[in-house]
Length: 464
Image 1 (tube, rainbow, N blue to C red):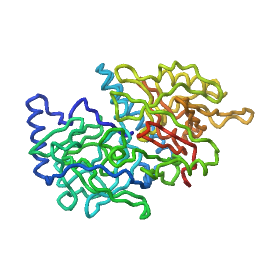
Image 2 (image 1 turned 45 degrees about the vertical axis):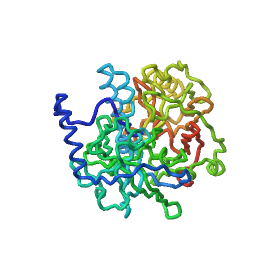
Image 3 (image 1 turned 90 degrees about the vertical axis):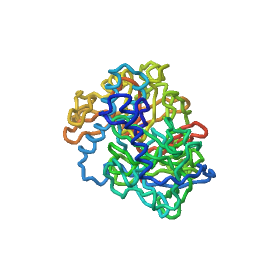
């Protein structure tokens, strides 16, 4: 989940204080974008629906030589940043903006590799299940952030085409703009990133190996010349949300799956797209013998691109916790609800639900309760237990509409190496619930957008 755009304000400089100034600066930005980018135009095209490929997913902290405690601290900090942003928006009493900020404070958790243009230019981008736009930084850049690969130069690609203002794709932008008959976009991702540039069509190349590599023409993307923020050492973002401009919506069939390896595993995770995305082989290779389960997506009109689910309750082992189902409901103003997201590290739990889980763990684990201030978690226990004390940590069960997702202890508890405490890998949220990727370890999860279903099955993600 990376960061869905916050459409409540445009990506204009903080120094812009008046409507006149903002209008002039925005017009100047659009004019400069058109000066530096070619404007060859052609209509958008949709894929034939038979695309399928496999991609390697690399965690943002992979290969960075962090210690175990540093990795955990960074993961917690990324989730805590979401809480801070949410509290800031809540302070201005804007519930719709607060709902949007629920997923705007992450810089991304997983990177994928792809190539753009003819000849292809390889680059990495943030996988973002919380937004729609595919975009990368383009040369010459008026304002860009550092990235590990060269900026994409549209003038050097034989297949680049800027989209005209009347293109259907241009009309699918939340705030479409037109300058000299060329479609121009602006996206703002909370306080972490922004991009502005030309909406264009280009040929993209996907695939982790030659056997699954495919070239897809006429993919609409943002060629950004004014960008800011943190791209997690990548060169752009690839939106996998439910909106019309996301990669999954453009290419079709509208389905993808991923299998995330254990959090500290050196083995990369995998993403499967289109016709490659299914759970049939996973079910036969899984040692758990668990059946595939499915639950319907829920639409939140305030955040239509996000993957909301209907969560009915939580159990610790066989004990159903006393949580009012309204704790997981989407409110009339668009706040609340439950989102599943690959771009959040540890889970946010709605405050009342979190307190019920905390009380349940205090009852189930007969050890002294501690606060692990070293990594920022506040439901912890002294660990290991004394020799004369037997401790059984229960499974954590999420009861969805029509499906139960059972998390073993390693998917929701962690051991902080500096203190040795056993801690709940979740934090409380005052607005809603986000199921983070730590809780999705060793689950093969399928997003079937066409049928509005999320399906999942336990899997050994390091070997499938």
